[in-house]
Length: 379
Image (cartoon, rainbow, N blue to C red):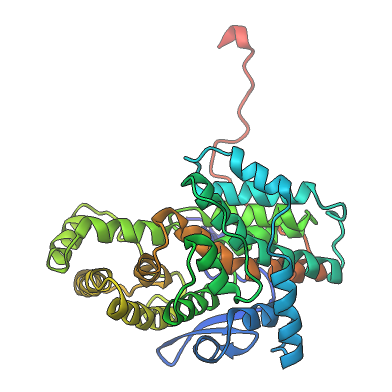
């Protein structure tokens, strides 16, 4: 192995690609750490709201009361979709995956923005607010359209989390459901340079418009090794069906060399993801109020995977049982992730615009070199 080959970091593991003030992830004193703008995720999940966290990520500081009220009202006012986007949703195939629909709608929104190529701070913040507000509406509207149900329009008396569940299901959620949804959105809002955020920053580094950056992020999020993992988790739980089948199922999968979705993390290798601890408590609380089996099977799977593989669950694992007990369809799990992560994506795009250098890594070529061209008649 040459000296150059030894420097290659497959998957860019542990490569520092940029500076950021948005979020910090680390392992310290045997504990997984996640902070937004310096604030521990545990405190934000307990004391804050999604709207407050969105403000923090976009503006860099926790809002004063009047600032939060004004920001929340702005999001409410921007929730409704232009008629053209509703028309798009009605004409897309009902068999389309909701994430494909979401990224298509984002691209269409870009065609309607006459300031699409403006990248100054204030204009970018306004675009970010609009996208944060509209993501839940796009997801809820398409789901109801594909199910042949009447649209449930946004309500300005409901917060971000409650309004999404209301539009999706057609009935107002209870207090426990709202809290669970709100906390879940907080936990997924940002996570440093995950794959989708990196994709957004790469696009932003070319000075692409913000819609193009978010399309890049949504496409990346859909992969089963990223945001698509939570859908694969619930499919696994449904396949297992009862807790006492979990260990046998896991052993069979591992013996075949198959991956167990919802376990392991590139950064939190030897510790548990701090978001998982919070989601696990949420899943347990919802299980007491609604269907207990998803949480029970999840516990059995967690025990079996640790016993045979020594892996901890990541954020996707208990998200699955939370979403299932919030009556969110399986193929919407990734879009719920996006409804939250749009805050982090837009914050990172804006940060990249304001301190930009084109992201252009190199590859180590391992193919043949200096080959002689042979004319086609002599081959």
